[in-house]
Figure 1 (tube, each protein chain N blue to C red):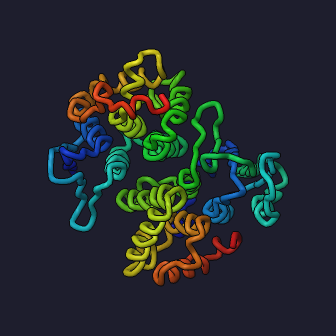
Figure 2 (tube, helix red, strand yellow):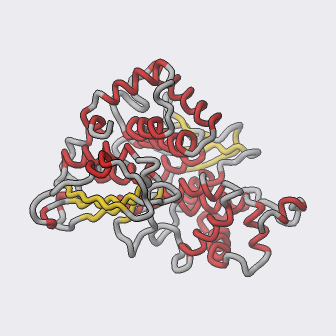
Figure 3 (cartoon, each protein chain N blue to C red):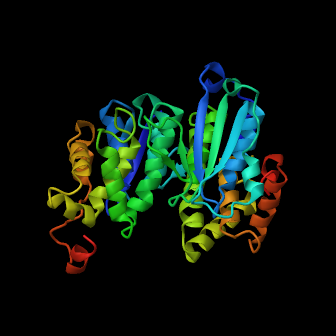
Length: 218
Length: 184
């Protein structure tokens, strides 16, 4: 989970001297809020430098958004563990992540970029608790397919199953905040499902918002 | 610990079947059988019915098989292809652009991620196998050569051969007139 992973210090990122360079292209019409939350968590664990550019295809990018991914990092670029470059541009199939341009397929989709950042936060993410991480994946797929890309009917079906899960539990998977909560919270906000959410979802949204990592992007 | 995957014969979880069969034929304690539903039971509290969840769980359970890739980035590339399979590739209105993208990516490579089969190959293969639009393209020979090569290569992959025969293939010859003339 997100909270537990902050205790892990054995990341490959901290062992090697290799600076990891992440380039994320995002569309201002649908800001991927989960990536902002994960950026806050990364900063608690690593030295992260961040830069923001606005491509000419992107219009009206709110200054509040461009200011999030801007910091001076450490003085020398090489002193950072991680450099994140955010490019606001008119990408069509969802946000896109590049890490090793010559060796990888561009990673498309907010939930997939979130998975990658989570793996940086916790190198044992896929092996710590296999059943739990696979349940998290189910919520991430629901957030991506039903809440972000689905029609009205699919959206409300997703909110109903969310509400039913949250009737008996504080969090979506297990007993603490996980990636499932971060990405689902982001998807609900982006698709305007927050203001008229049912009672249990409202209670959970409040619980999320009380976490300091969520506050920077509200 | 050994794992038994139940497969619904009428609506088989295809990628889960290929994953189970691959692990079984490479000597892992995994087996599968036909049952009333697609199911992987872990313990009394936990089970998975979702096709991709069964793939993910089994691939994570046997990391030395590399079915989920071998690095943080490769794992995420696998997730990217699972999203692609369930999304654009399964959506008939986006199928042509999706298949062109896939054809470009597959140009220089054999497997979608890394240098061995992953669950990404299995989920993409499953959608292609069940797609009338793709089976029609396949019969035209010169269309999307790289995807055709990839699809046929997996059909003949030793480790999953027996499972491949079990999965119903979409029939392009039985295409209705409306389907065969749609945007192809």
